[in-house]
Image (tube, rainbow, N blue to C red):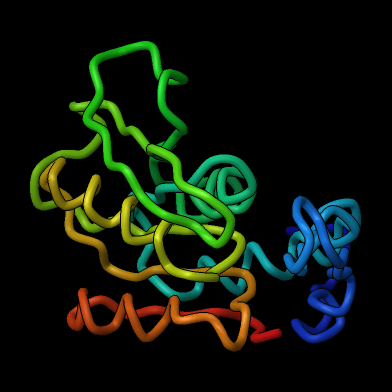
Length: 181
């Protein structure tokens, strides 16, 4: 039983602050650290995310900020946590997927044995922008034999093509964001 009752989702999300021109000019960085520092807000978001799938669903988180929510949600769901990391960070054999993002490109990796074939997976990231990072993670999960049951993002950046692109490429996957900025 929690030491506090959860606050409203809107109140928790109001703790996110925008940092203009970070890490490059023109980028509106969404700083979630005030939300994470507030125990009640973090609890509220974790409970909300956990409500999207049944207990026991595997939870994958995308490095780095997606890890924070995904590991907490995995704990809440009594599930396993699967890290999806940047290239060269995982110690065992991996598969890789290149992707584009709002301000460059990168590579994600997952352990080759991270997912039991056919297992449902909840995929969590902090931000849905262009959709490149999430698409790469979906590809890794599917190539590993998993089934993406739902994709959750804390926030979605309005005016960028992420949601549209993901829905076109993955029409059978449900996508949810708690706030659109």
